[in-house]
Length: 301
Image 1: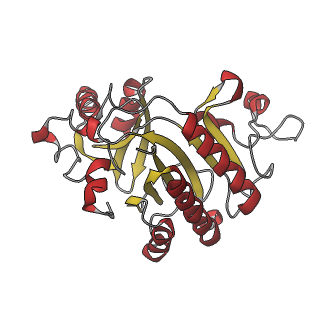
Image 2: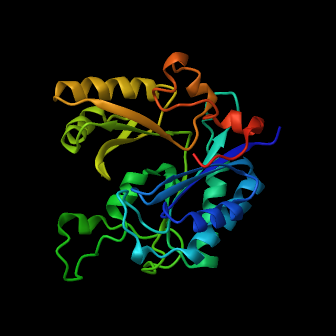
């Protein structure tokens, strides 16, 4: 069987249904899920398929996003680099644990990032494995991208010595389109837990962070959220995260008020969640990649 890849494009648009429909149409058949959030002002498009199909769909969606969106008018809860914010390529083996070999994903990542710079003029920053045995994370890009260089007369402080330049594309972004983080990584699960206040979220986040969990405390409309990426979900999955957030929230006088999955989840991770708790944990039927591949079709999740 030819290798299968997932590409999870994060786009800085979560409100305009007409634009989102155009972007979804541009992605074509590899699109398995579209998750939108008007408060984050962000949409997550999950593509799955063979390498050529996924690469072509990612390019088509990227072109549509860069053509139609304008970062200058954007305001949302979630941090962002550009209209096409994050594009990770992920090796995927349906029904099995996440593959560890990232070589195919790295090739797709590098080809996409080069194309993005040459064809659309968008600077890109690579994350995941880098030449020479190095590695870079997405949070590192968010901290260091376009930090002013020494001698510019700014007051950026010590971080100005750690400026990160784009790997591909122009050295500075167009204010309309911004820049893109393009990655090669293993499967992760984006999962948010709602809590009773922003103060509770801020108290919980430092305690829940670890190598398997990246977390932010966000005010989302009138609600508060512990927004997480579970970067090793087979070891630390959504059920464990939810229970830990609930315990920590209670200790500081707060409570959990629900949870949501962003995008899709591998069946191997979903099957580890207690079946009777899945709906309460925001993990409904049809939430796995495998269920969509089996013919449930796209969802406006």
